[in-house]
Amino acid sequence: MFLMKDIVRDGDPVLRQEAADVTFPLSEEDQQLAKDLMEYLVVSQDPEQCKKYGLRAGVGLAAPQVGVSKKMASVLVPPVEEDGKSPFTDVIINPVIISESVQAGALTEGEGCLSVDKDVPGFVPRHDRITLRYYDVNGEKHQVRLKNYPAIVCQHEIDHLHGTLFYDHINKDQPFSRDDDMIMIE
Ligand SMILES: CC(C)(C)[C@H](NC(=O)Nc1cc(F)cc(F)c1)C(=O)N(CC(=O)NO)CC1CCCC1
Ligand SMILES: [Zn+2]
Image (cartoon, rainbow, N blue to C red; front, side, top):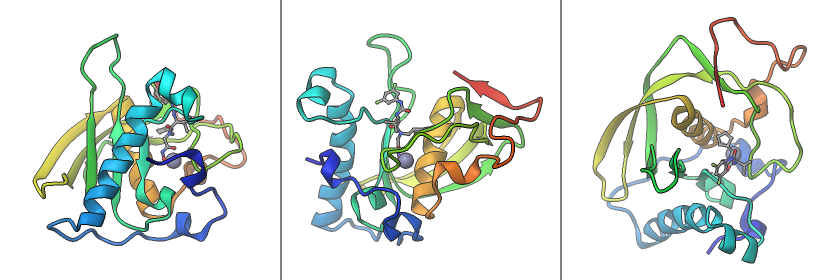
């Protein structure tokens, strides 16, 4: 199981690399990686286990963040209401955003990152809606349309696979600048 000590922090070159495509069928090693990436999110979102293992509760974790430069990331968007359904949960492999809204979206709280220990204030403008194509661990192809928070999480994780960190998108001069039709996501 991954612990905070296994999560690579900003400054490590692996976080600035273009990750490699994953080949199918998955090797034993890649199958285990996918399991471990999702397990971190599940455990970290359980308050008791999160505390027990000293984790930061995570909604997404990309392979480069555990030092593996491969195009794989786990996403576990918590249900909006108690024991509701998660809006999006999967391990996304070789993901490609095949279309995206012109309209921007950003979290009103800004973003953080499991690999970035410092706070970097500011809006992170992303696409409010995306169509995402990816493969799952069984090699099945998926094409999903996401909007708002699930779309933000997936864009954040896919950025990691291309060596981009959230603060790269923050406007240096006016961190809280926004265009008037940007969707602000709570
Ligand atoms: C960096 C951290 C603050 C831990 C962030 N969590 C988060 O924003 N809120 C959160 C966490 C939960 F588990 C449950 C919940 F409902 C809300 C996060 O996991 N990430 C993932 C990451 O760093 N992936 O590389 C950062 C998020 C910022 C926007 C999208 C992902
Ligand atoms: Zn991150």
